[in-house]
Length: 544
Image 1 (cartoon, helix red, strand yellow):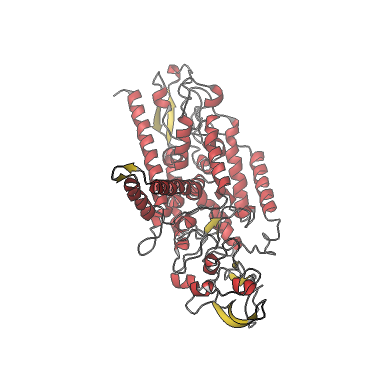
Image 2: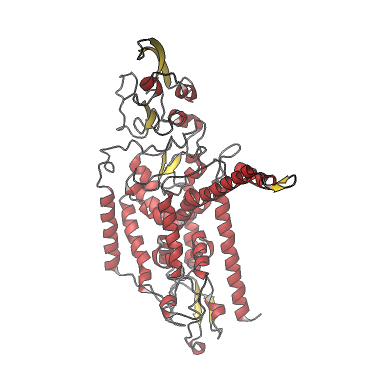
């Protein structure tokens, strides 16, 4: 077998591995659902546990990480030995960028697009700024982590979009009742729809708030591949920058025969990381993604790979050239951004957003933000679809972290899945019994909207549906005089603040769907001793 043919075999092996990891990523995402019995599989968060950027940022910000997250050290070990093969072989977002960058790819080399650009240092400076934020408790780097970005986009935008199309399409086919003779079209579509509904889309009509921005960011990153192949990986990815730091002198290195090289540029044209500073010349291992495209592309067969000791520096080995001044400036910029995030009264703990209802088991807000990546895994497994990504409710520092929106879906009284799947334990894993004793908010009646109060007509749906065994909502019979002077007895509902846990069932089932007559606010949450509106021993009801 010729050297070129062996090279192409390695390239196709890499592509096969990439596709396998992408399918595994999507398979684990779709498998994130309430199990028939027991706890969800720990494999659901496998990709996050091998992400060294999440490990480092969480450790710097929260000074603690789950034991399982130490698997990310294996990724670093592989990187030290083989270079950034995680980016070129494993990362599912990198695979999508490789596919997008390969569509319509030109055959002739273009020096501006193929060679290494000094602008590729940008990702290292971004990493420096994000890590400086993490040292002072800011976990914002997770917003741009490639695994988190892809999981969040797929969970909140892509899968719900596909689900809507399938549900609406199946409904249209069923309502149209078209067919030939006795055969109806819905006889073919309904079994497929039913299987997907029962095994994939377990929350009917699931949708998420504010996904336009999430999807828009994802689409922009893909579109940038038309300007430069793998633009995100070359210029912006903070995980790639971290792995590049550990790829400074890998054991596996590219070699070349200078006497055979005519600097045609064909080896640089298909390079995913633009790791070549000059055609056929110096090579930057920190930028190499291990795609192996260069070796079969060389018509002279002058390129190859060999294993060498890390302390041996060869003339062909070139550094990225990160300046100390630039790194310091980037770190200062990160601290300035964090100071801006925390300039609001809410960020300083002097004000509480009533709409910021965190899932049960969530740590105190500052510690929660030091751990939460906003990956969307807890939202994916939520049985009711009530966990939604924040936009500005938690400030910019907490963008896309989870909050409960009872009007969309309440917190299931018997479910504790969000804490079971959280990869950083920003949501503590509680038992069902502990979860049922944890308060995430407090319900209050709006007497200008509640039907018995505002309109003098009976309604006790909230009391009937309250999941607390001895009911956090109770009714008191009260005489009410109508406009005709006739006195009737109406059961007026009240909230017992000592029993209410803020699950939101009452708000969700209220007949007033636009603006319920009873709403849950973040007050009285167990995780924050300062957000307690009920004075000890005060008793009484809660309404406004």
